[in-house]
Amino acid sequence: MAHEYDAINLSQGFPNFAPDPKLIELVTHAMEAGYNQYAPLGGIYSLREVISEKIESLYGRTYHPENEITVTVGATQAIYTAIAALVWPGDEVIVFKPAYDCYEPAIKAQGGVPVLLQLQGTDFSIDWNSFSNAIGPKTRMVIINTPHNPSGEVMTAKEMLKLQSALEGTDIVVLSDEVYEHLVFDGELHQSVSRYEDLSNRSLVCASFGKTFHVTGWKMGYCAAPKYLMDEFKKIHEFTVFCTNHPMQRALATYLKNPEHYLGLSDFFQRKRDLFLGGLKESRFTFTPSKGTYFQLLNFSAISDESDIVFSERLTKEMGVASIPISVFNKHLEDHSLLRFCFAKTDDTLQKAVEILCKI
Ligand SMILES: Cc1ncc(COP(=O)(O)O)c(C=O)c1O
Image: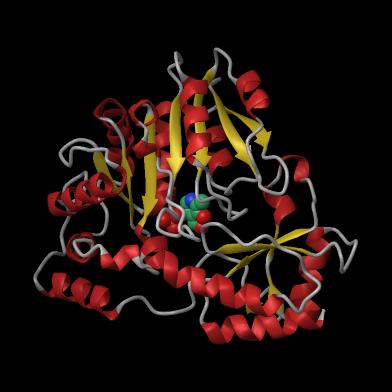
């Protein structure tokens, strides 16, 4: 619809600005240097090594590059492969709603059963009683996502510890979608499962270079997990993908060596969030500033009592700003008059969108 109505597209989660030219140069250089044939199954060793060092320095857990890290076709493939490797027909998988859209189809494709738990309140927190009640003999996996798409919330250390203790004594596996790990605002720290020993021993972490380096079209990511889980993961990876884009792996292995390339991202995107929200103070939308990701929710209940789908369609067609209605991510399509806007856009695009949104 954004295309059809020539609207400013703040709906999908991708930047409308260029990645670092140095990264592109590194890919070109790798192609010219002849890295144009298959890479090893798990990814080139130097990339796995630098991923391992990054995780260890940020979160304190060591994943062995030899057998605990696999480079994937974006986080989407890591997520699908983890589910295909570990979920069997009849297994239950707990998914917190609103949820990113690729989890449930992957679970169903394996004959698994998604058990949907709605996050509660304006801060989208986990209802721990419902969570404990949802755990049963068939529970195979829990999927978490922090920083969280679409809400922009982040899990706290306290919540991670609660999750860790709620799973104690079970053999439940955690799939931790951490694609926005480098986009956490206001001085908070990303709570990776890798910070928590018991949790990380049962977790597969899925990450995305596309999200981190403004190159979503490259579809490069990775999965990190203890060997016993990674062994299963690789059984599917070998015969569905085998290996990912080789020259891009070479480029990322070099680029990732400089932590400045990812440690500055929180400030970069926080400034964009603040630019967007600063302008919207004059509008009739209400909001809580996003704590992570590059998404911001806006509540339009002071403007219209239409459904979020109808309102967002009208916003696209009549006003020229495209967003995503949150009900589509919710259990029973619950509608709380919320729209998701992506602020990974140039300042100019954000300012134009703000001007329109302030007139509504
Ligand atoms: C929460 C979440 N997980 C996974 C993905 C997919 O990441 P990738 O593009 O690396 O496959 C996205 C993309 O929007 C996302 O928002």
